[in-house]
Length: 239
Ligand SMILES: Cc1cc2nc3c(=O)[nH]c(=O)nc-3n(C[C@H](O)[C@H](O)[C@H](O)COP(=O)(O)OP(=O)(O)OC[C@H]3O[C@@H](n4cnc5c(N)ncnc54)[C@H](O)[C@@H]3O)c2cc1C
Image 1 (spheres, rainbow, N blue to C red):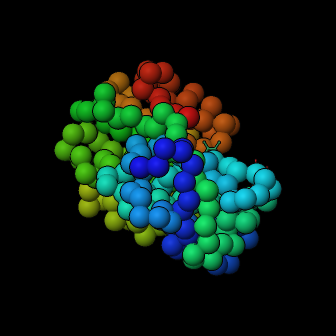
Image 2: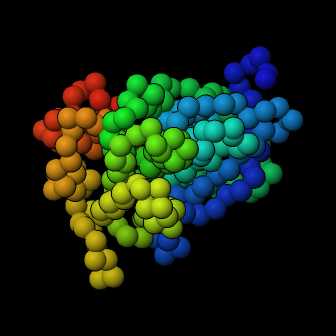
């Protein structure tokens, strides 16, 4: 393990995740260490700071680790093409090098909540740290009660990980996908994740929730969860 907190990683894969006809681009970047060092272990929900080697601009930014925390051999990230850094990252070819600082952040620590129901609630690229959590939960599925994911996207074309989410019922994980605005082919729910939660009325008295998304979404979901009986101490953020 290098002493410095920064280390070099190389792009192994860059795969588009949003529908090819979608105006917004989200890619999955998979990074592996350049030298033969081990990938640093991390906890589900942690993030890293990614920078471009040798330059100040585009400035480094933070990205949640989206991959399996158990014995990692690489890190996955979901990057939304939004500004200078993210555009640079979305265009990277395999073999390109990046500077990675971390892992950092308090993670989603579910250890104290063994035996509880778990609700993972995220929108857009907020689903990235939650993916790491559900991979952890699959390994420890018997330690938790009901597990449900509420994922929100702008439109059906913006959905991420549709195939993977469909397989989660094999692990007794319920998945609820909502979109802000639908299309003719969409027959699922339309609205925000907090509306889907409020409609389902989960019992929050013995449950913990992990939230990941922009602050307006976090505030609205927190309010809904409080109304459902979730204690503030059981509404978790990863930063
Ligand atoms: C703890 C933490 C974790 C993060 N994890 C991720 C992640 O997993 N994936 C990711 O794509 N970004 C993530 N971000 C945001 C990321 O760090 C950058 O802000 C983002 O890539 C934009 O940087 P930029 O320099 O390209 O553009 P900027 O000029 O900084 O931003 C351009 C515009 O895009 C908006 N924006 C930035 N990111 C998003 C987003 N994901 N969805 C919607 N609007 C956005 C900004 O508010 C701004 O208006 C995270 C931020 C933090 C603090």
